[in-house]
Length: 418
Image (tube, rainbow, N blue to C red; front, side, top):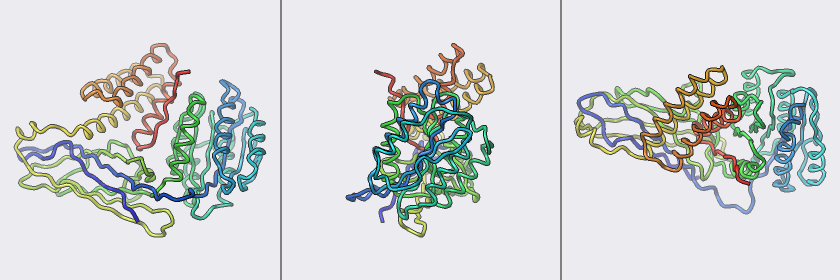
């Protein structure tokens, strides 16, 4: 069984002998290449479409129909699929079955039109039941929820919904959410995706759909590890003062990481305080734990970092590692953007602009790469929309970008060109 590669890269290749050192360390986890096989794993998808009345605005129901149709067209006859719709009522148009009659499924999708209120939890629950009652051993069993609104019928508490999603994950059913338009509760959809070990997407344009589903299906087919946990073991006297990714934690304090997917490295930045050192200083060790497809027992991998101690002047003269510097800045900016969007949610535009200005200053202090340029442009767009007083779309986009950055998830930007 191939193992992921684990690298620990410090911002500077030493610690100070005359004072405490604040040191960022990049933990880079590179999943192994997926085994080349003649066929991908069987997919078992529960498509769940919000058809509440608000889906009629901005042709969001058209987005949802296009997304569901795209997914159906990508399925093989050996895959399984169900189709559930909901407004204030939940209805399963196509119970879970082999995806052999795609024409019938496409006709059912085309006939979905807006209705009443939003029983989001009930719709998701039915979709998860369809998948869970027909689990494919060794296959990839997932609910795809497409919604534009707030849960306002039945269970509507985000914590309770996320708890149910996590419970379903324990039975083998994961959840991916797609938010449509500018009215949905992005915090709820993000929490559902995190709890369900899936992905969260903000869909602004139908042009994103092909990329989203290619990413989603690739991620399902190329997953080399699930239930991934990272333990951080600082050296003597060393303190972990921050994990810039803002990761969820297991009960024992280990960091919960996204699934290991071939082609998508997981990048974590840990901020340490290292006491004055003499000679070689053991700075950090990490232990990675995951479940490989088809394996009943957990696999583990370890890595460690030991650095020499040098004088303060020598330490200051050491060039910072560019990858660590850039990743730390981008994660700090992602945190600031999330805080800015939360300020906007509470109507505090001045605080949001202060946080965005702080983010711009961080970006201005590092080399201007293409990725940094994208972040600068994103902040400028949010600023401009705050100025106009119409920022709902930018806040959705900013929260999605921040989520993707913090969790090392793929981001699918909108192509606004015609």
